[in-house]
Length: 359
Image (tube, rainbow, N blue to C red; front, side, top):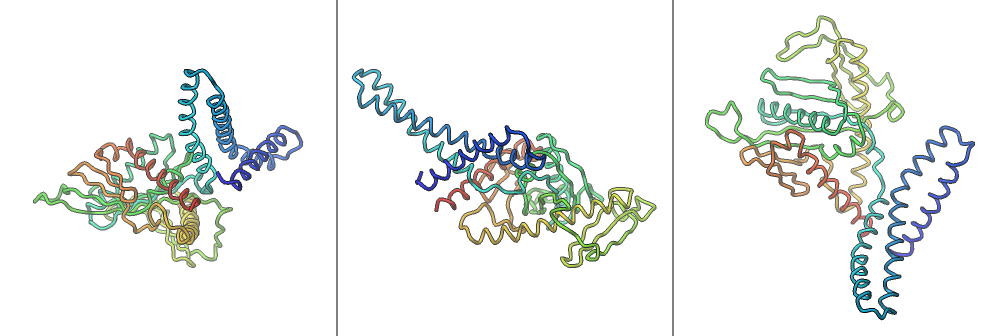
């Protein structure tokens, strides 16, 4: 490590000790205590990593002295073996510290709004969109997250034109944010008599949940229409005008909510989705500016980018951003093996960001 980084690490160790002393004293307001506790907890893994690195360095120095001054051949051989182990360990410990120092995505701890829409491919695309949505439902359940369906627009054959849900839990956005993009499916549709493989697509968007303090919406910028909710094929499912359509005039964004029987609840949900979409637009603009400054990244962040292919005849799922192929499509669709893909993408993102910092 260079001297400037070593000086920065020493600064972090001193700040950690200072925070420990301040938090141990009385007289802090609740707001200050929460703010300083958050900073202290974020420094904990970094300071633990620094301590481990320093211990390894001290051990290596002691072993080097022992090898150079020792007369016992057997003891010297053991020390040399231990030296080699520590020399291999040190770069890993340094790498872990550098990873811990990478800027955190401020939205990682947020809940997320998941939106899945059928793309090209007609009814087959809608059926695939429904399968993708259920995949995320099962994945959320496996991770102990709470999934609340916000809106479902079904087709007559069991597919989804579009579906959205609020997913709540620990680090939801951190794990799902790279799922945004075009998901392509290759298979023989049940309605295909000749057995030809068709290619269809669905689009996934994962938005960080935004609070009122994040995005202020001026009521004068909204056009709110109410209408009667309807089910598949236009079949009426409600006898009152409870469905809500909100149009945000400055951006042109339109949000429709009709899942609840209460107009008030549908309006509140629609505003929640609108707020998150506006927040995501700001985030996308920031990310695009940042991405232009760095050469390597995982995907472009463009929602129109094809990120993954699900080939049912071959039983494989391929993520094109990290060139990962798993021949376990059933386990991916059940949510069981989705972590294997997500972990690989997160690791690639970390490596790309680390390389950008070091270059």
